[in-house]
Image 1 (cartoon, rainbow, N blue to C red):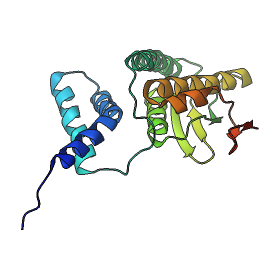
Image 2: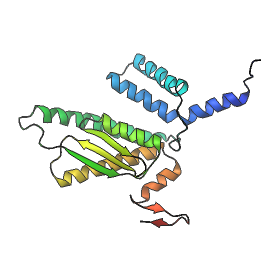
Image 3: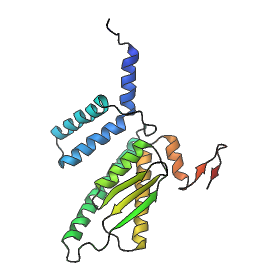
Image 4: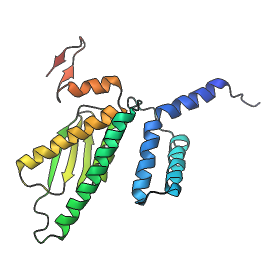
Length: 200
């Protein structure tokens, strides 16, 4: 006896694809960045790989990150491209200059989001930029550990922490839900009680 596929099944597939659109776009972007060149073949290949990953190897539903805001997305992509170029040039110069790379550091940053999807996008965007790499991510404590290739002093370390928080804000505003965007105004380390009051 064959099973009948009703309109609900098609609607469920379309609903799942619509909510995974940010992940699909991000997988296509990462695919092209890994190839190192932009071409129609790489773009089409990235789409095929992204669809294959999401359809043939489905993951559990991810809470949050289901919205896509074009203006905020362009701002996020623009900053990412600028960071990619400037950091690549800086790392290249530090590698060939006589003084070399003086000191590196491992910093921890307390984030404001705990969405699996948003944390993944943030981690990938930070790791793809030359000179920095995410080495640990504690979702429950919202703590991210990042290796920085070159730092000069304590003020430089704080500047790196601020840049991570700024990248987190761009990611949340591009892909996050209204609740996640509102949480950006809550200082790190603050929890919301059952009555809706903010407590340190």
